[in-house]
Length: 136
Image (cartoon, rainbow, N blue to C red; front, side, top):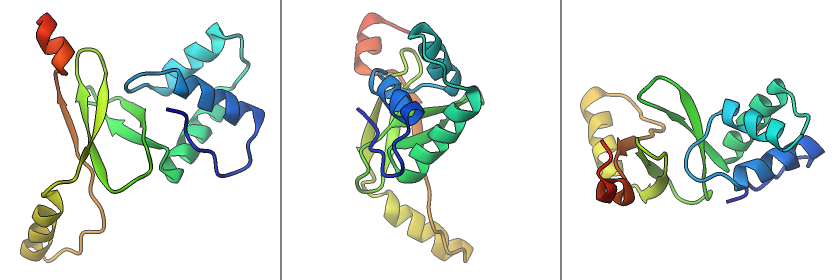
């Protein structure tokens, strides 16, 4: 899925969007830098990080906090609020609707006295393919 660019379309941003479109599942900035090197693209580390931040602000990417403590990104279709399930073996990910969680968030807000403005949830496990092949 190619992130939608709504700001100035510079050559590095276009190149990074193309690299993201080739990826399946989550990826890190280091993954994109390695992809760029393999493709003989001269894109700096700072440009990759700035572009990832920009795409995340636009809703074309979401940042994931992996159980390892690393930060990764996943391409998203900017739609209604959703969450992600991420395979801890192969890295595949899927968007899942926020069914029922908004009501839980409202209850937490009511009980705590907080006005909750946003939330996000990432669920980690094994995808159906990895479960079939017996990944641990």
